Picture (cartoon, one colour):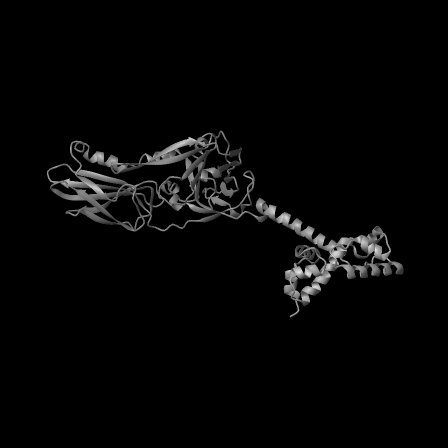
Length: 486
């Protein structure tokens, strides 16, 4: 960050220029020239803007305008003349279509009014931002990873351009329910911790996040700037905007953060970073899409720190959310979704149990079993029992004792006989036979369900409905709708 702070100290360039031009007279004279437009902090997305001045000085012969801007990919500013205004109204249309976007520091404009017989008056406005040139922002997927330690497959990894075939660096951003995790690996065979001539103390990783994707040309409220050094604790830098009498300054304020992180150093291999931003930093939920840029501070062979960025090249581009890539969250894999697991696996278990139950029920349907040899005597006894049940089933109080008495059998022997031949107990076989009679009545008549239930020996229509569901997996109403003869 030292290089970056050094650059920030050069931003009030016209303050120095103004003092150099009029140091002997500015304090003694009133300010009779000021900007009406543009004002410090203005953002223009069109390729032109109007410069308007308020000039109250008498005997003004002309007003000269100059601008300080940054060429594309450069950290050094250029000063150019914008033109001269010789009479009121003191306005000038400034065509900026040939300029690159002016981000982070912005453009500074200096107006100098020349007065007959007097010292010139000077006014300035800094922090005029231009965002008129379209930017091709990359879109980068962020896969799900349940663990912040393990890195997902490198399918979505991003590579840094270190400009040295001996060295390489890759980054991977993943997410889970708790945090957004940044992994960066730098392969450098020449790296070792106490190497003379290399400034490892200032090497590290910067993580720049725009949660709301506001695309501001300079750090807006809510933008997060984290620095993870090779040695020491990570810290966060927030920027406060100060505007005073035409000046525009970004004042950095740094504070340590206790976020989960790890820095691994490998002698003659390189180093790696892992840094997790908890979801609480995003207001409790990680956004679906964020603006993000990663910057590696890498020492070169001469010991100087180089800033290698995934987005932008100059310092003023690197730190501007306007050009950062869009990182969007991929859906969580189905098998890793705990909520779906709680639904899918119980549902699969329920379906399996239902299948087993249906198989058992089918085996227990009231039919003559062929798995054992029945004697003629047993067949005759069962037919006698079946005839009595069919004749008397309309009686709601029909009991096993009554049927056994009429068949000349003991109740237990009767129950065993029905069980061997149907798989049902006596009461279930009786209810099943009643539903069979009820099916014929539902199919061939328009009588009410209550009337049919009474005629078939059920205690109520509700009992008949329960028996239909138990034995036939349907209700009397559905059966009648599907099976009734027109």
